[in-house]
Length: 601
Image 1 (cartoon, rainbow, N blue to C red):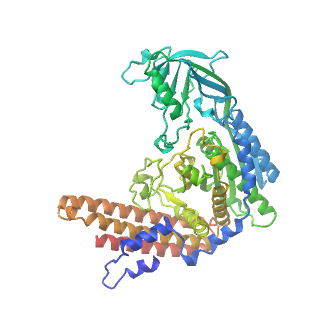
Image 2 (cartoon, rainbow, N blue to C red):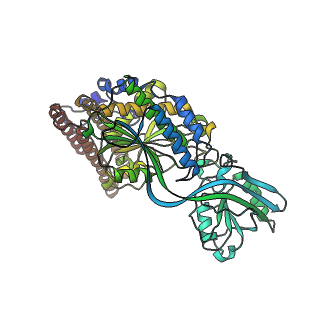
Image 3 (cartoon, rainbow, N blue to C red):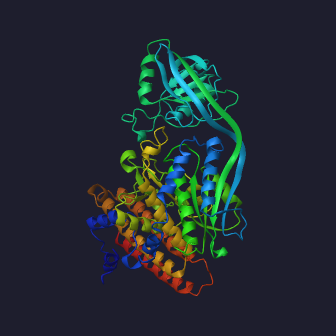
């Protein structure tokens, strides 16, 4: 692609871009960007250096230990999981404490306000009139159907509750639900608010599953969800599988139907417990690379796989340093396990030093065949989050986030992370790709503070947020892929240096060339239809949009090129001057390409 772009500068000063077929082939092969062949030595070397450091058996042991627990902020299973990871890391050589003079530390902090922490113990739901019997139930928190009771549902007492079932209808006044258990296909959160909190129902039963759960074929899936803690109403919400809802749906239409609900659950007061492991760098002023895996939510993939993968990453990397297999990095590495959003937000608020980059590890163990998920890297907001175009900008089923042009700040991190992923992909046929920013995990906390952060995840999992997200849906090899590439980035960025910065500059510049070439092709395609060309007003609207997109991408990549200087943390290094000169040359080239594209349009 480099030669194609350079060949475009002919003596006539007219930009001749590669054909759409060439651009398409390049885009698919690069999957956002890939490093130029001459610049691959550093990153491929880092991937080779960390290969074998991650122990999948170690990760699996952690995952097996925490999977039985219904992990929610501060509850029994959450705290036991923190303790399990703490002991695992301590055995690997981390020392308790947080003193800066200690290199490799391990500490537990409690963040945030005291809130009720909910632990399910056992529950059952039966239809008693007519005598259909039990539809869902579990005997302990490890039970397969444990998600059928919504988080924060109040216990019913030993005798349980017997009450009539009533179908939910939006047109009914809320008070008509008083004293009943309401059945509907709205999300449990909606039913609970409308029928229990507003109408005085005893509880509600929901059949809702997201479209990505494939409810027409995934007939035994039971959704996991939370309702608000409401000590005044002390109600409950239940989720039922499509198969069991089919039974309920038919019964409710036949006349008087009564149900028996028994819920045994425990509330305790708790703050957000966060486990922090730190591998100290050799240069205290060089900053930190942060890694985050949220511990709450009870799924094996979401996010047991991320928690376990990161635990084995931290222990494996520390052992490799102490055994002399890899050098200790200049930058420190900090690993966080805690409540999603809260642990990263509170840690950032309490941390005295700079954070240079964050990698969020969430849902990374999906068995691709069983779950139908894709391994993804969610990029930092770039123009593709606003103007998404195939093949470079394909959203997941999660859907686009709320991104405006003012949210776009260019950084080298997107293409840098994808360069490492692409090396792994090419070596192993791992089908990783990137998706535009969508939001929904801890990367939001870092981005809100201006810290570059990407999300490493898998989606769309048809078992996402259901009872069927258990160990049999996890693939060790997926955990290995994510761990190796993430550790390689930690090793490469952690060591820093002007030479590696030059490599990253080449990666980002080549990605910028590809992107601008693709957007120029897009502009020509949108402007070429006869219906556009022969309508001056329409042509002007399309032209304005396309120019805006090209300018946005050019501006974003100029900021990304400028950010490469931060790869070298030593501001007094004599090697920074030639790096800055190369960045200036790259900026000049990019402005020229932008000018030629706009002039041609």
